[in-house]
Structures are given as structure tokens and as C-alpha cells.
Amino acid sequence: MTGLADVSRETIDRLKIYGDLLQKWNPRINLVSRATLDHLWSRHIEDSAQIYDLAPHPVAHWVDLGSGGGFPGLVVAIMGAADRSPSRTTLIESDARKSAFLRTVIRETGANATVITARIEDIPPLSADVISARALADLDALLTYTERHLASGGSAIFLKGATWKKELSEVQSKWKFDYRLDKSRTETGPVILTITGVARA
Ligand SMILES: C[S@@+](CC[C@H](N)C(=O)[O-])C[C@H]1O[C@@H](n2cnc3c(N)ncnc32)[C@H](O)[C@@H]1O
Image (cartoon, rainbow, N blue to C red; front, side):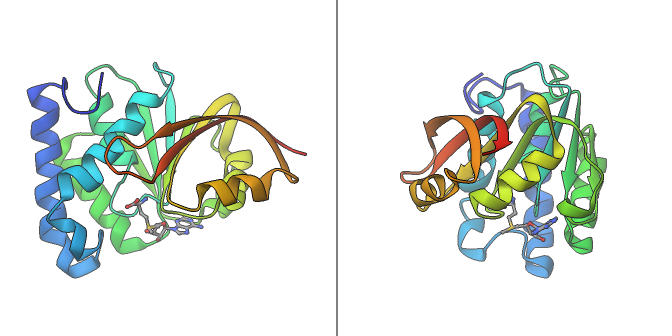
């Protein structure tokens, strides 16, 4: 699968339902910045779809950290419905109003996802097969969350902005891990880090 190029009509229809709900709710709870709302499909939906493609499918349990308006986790859950990969998705979001939005989209699209309204660091370990996060925290914090919630042998997939090189060098003395770097297909500058084998150095 390459992004949204070859997903089913049904998946596109569900993503449109999601997009319409986001347009409706955004003025009230600011799920994405107003400047990016006009480019919802490329800036948020396709950006999330490329993360789906990088995961080692089939995936049993996918956990998205700090989901906000649902990127990338809810796009992943909708894309995965056809192949049951992931077979289930958990979205963690501490904000109650954003969680209510996520639950509404799940109900309206029939996505197989669950929302936990809590702080990532307060939840018992989830033993995820894949963890994802976008625009949540620096790499050191993301690795701390990963250590808690990723099953051994799992992969963490992070979309990182311009500071990715600095963040990678800063964590070298504290953490051991393997990583693969992919350039974002939707924007120049950001990268996608796929991290395995996380342990404290
Ligand atoms: C900048 S937004 C990014 C949202 C989404 N991932 C995206 O890329 O559009 C970060 C989100 O993470 C949530 N968040 C931040 N720290 C968190 C924590 N420790 N536990 C759970 N959610 C958290 C915030 O409420 C916010 O919705």
C-alpha cells in the first residue's frame, strides 16, 4: 500500500466522514491549527497514512500517544479496517474534549479503536506492538513512553520535525536503540523515525 493511492472506496468514504467531523468541531476545540485546516487532506490525513505504510504488518495492537484530533492513530485505525491490521488501536489523549471528538469519529466511522483519556505516564503498560506519535514531545520523552508501553520486539514510529538530528544526538548517551530514517513524503524537512530495541544505555 502506498499512502492513500490504493485504498478502497470505503476507506476513503470513512476518511471523508472523519474530515467533515473535524471541520465541524475544529472551531470549538482547535484540533488542528486553523492555518492547516484548508490542507487537511495533505497536512494531516496523508501525513498519517504514510506512517501506516511503514509499520510491520500485520499488527495486533497499535497505540497512538497524544492523539489530539486523531493523527496519526485514527487514520491508521480507519485504514486498517479492511485487512484487520492493526486488529485494534488504542488512542491516548489527556484532553477530555479531544477524547470526546475521537469517540464521535470512531462511532461514525465504525473504526476499531478505543480512547483512553489519561496521561501516558499514568497508564499501566499497554504492551503495544506498534507505538506512534506526532507533534507530542522530544525524543527523550518519547523513548520514556516507549519503554513503558511497547512490547519487546515492537516498533515505535515517530514523525519528527526540523530538530530531529539534534534530538537524536542528545539521546545517544542515555538510550540504546536501532532506528531507520525515512523522509516524509508529504513535506520537505520532517522525517519518520522507526525505532526498535529500546533500552537504557
Ligand atoms: C500538539 S498535539 C498533537 C496531536 C496529534 N498527534 C497531531 O499530530 O495532530 C499533542 C496532544 O497530546 C496531548 N498530550 C500531551 N501530553 C500528553 C500526555 N502526557 N498524555 C496524554 N496526552 C498528552 C495533548 O492534549 C495534545 O492533544
